[in-house]
Image 1 (tube, one colour):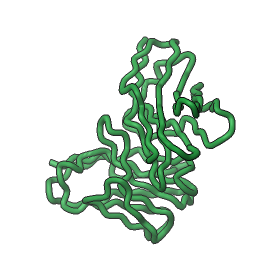
Image 2: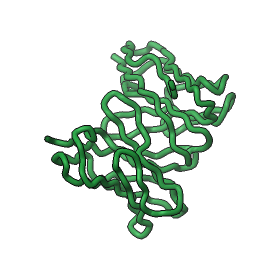
Image 3: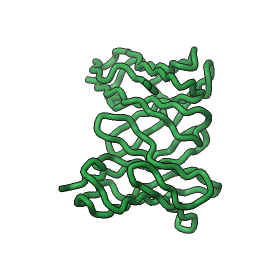
Length: 113
Length: 111
């Protein structure tokens, strides 16, 4: 009963490096989301997808890119990592739209030094 | 724009005491409201949801919330908390294709 799986759980990057945060779900959900969580700020939406091949920006998309080639996978790419991208990243999914509850992964803790 | 505000950043309580975590929302249209719980080093889990119907919503782990349209509130309550309820709690509401989260309330239950 995997649900939403995120890898890696922890990562340290140097400024200017790039990396991809992986997210996969086995619930056949159409909608998938990437959030970042910063202390005292709640969660902010980075990107979301309503189905394979369709993605759109959320509230804080700058410095990130996404793709959705399959229903199951929704990777998040950081290009030219910056200290401001130090955060905890959560992937989530829901069967239909944002009016339905979301299922969350356990997060990726990313530090940019 | 739809937004949610959690009025308390931290709430310390003793075990077996009642607790209320406060959430206000702003919207001029019908609302959908959620409470999520986050345990340390984990993702968010749904506690309960209000989509329509009865204004008193019961969730998991003995939590409940009341939707109050006149006060634009959706406060979370539990009559008797346990040590295991220590976690961060988030109120949330959708806005277009975005789920807007409050800043969170850290509930600490002391023995």
